[in-house]
Length: 219
Ligand code: ADP
Picture 1 (cartoon, helix red, strand yellow):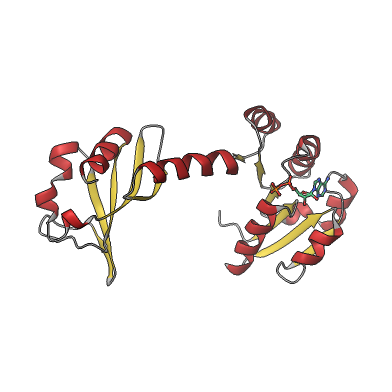
Picture 2 (picture 1 turned 90 degrees about the horizontal axis):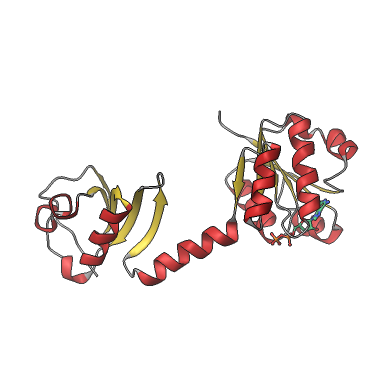
């Protein structure tokens, strides 16, 4: 199901950034925060911004929160408020509820309540930045499952002019280059004769170990 309308409770650093981006992408976003200053800051950015307590059932009912495709609880520090808002959004029948957790325990409680997706922005960003810091060619990655990753690897100078057949990632490590992003455009499903140049980015898929070994081999 495509989500079109989003209600965000809490317009702190995370909630406001999320709301701003969703609005820029053209989606309808309602923001709720009990801090009027935060609401004023976001009122020109979001479709609607309301100064209200997101833990009050009447408030959420009168705003018509149940008609939104997705409710996001972006309250972190006040764990009690986050949990109350999550229960209310679930009880009011919001189709998809997403909540930010500040700790594992907070996340476990949110999951028990039935929150559809719990996110840990600080923890996940810390992990991501750590990987990028220790692997100079790693631009970004997605964990497909516990064992499989898709990684974007920059092409270092020493691979310039080499073909995919020369680097032979599949034969040597078991991972495949499924796309090459070149300044001129993307090559999807590249062939063995495709040549790499320094500004290219390889999109590589494989097990975590395979991708890691390939990455280390090109450092
Ligand atoms: P961040 O780290 O993303 O800034 P915070 O927890 O610091 O997260 O900020 C959460 C935001 O949620 C704040 O702007 C705060 O005013 C708001 N907030 C907290 N409790 C409620 C509540 N009960 N109703 C509405 N907004 C709330």
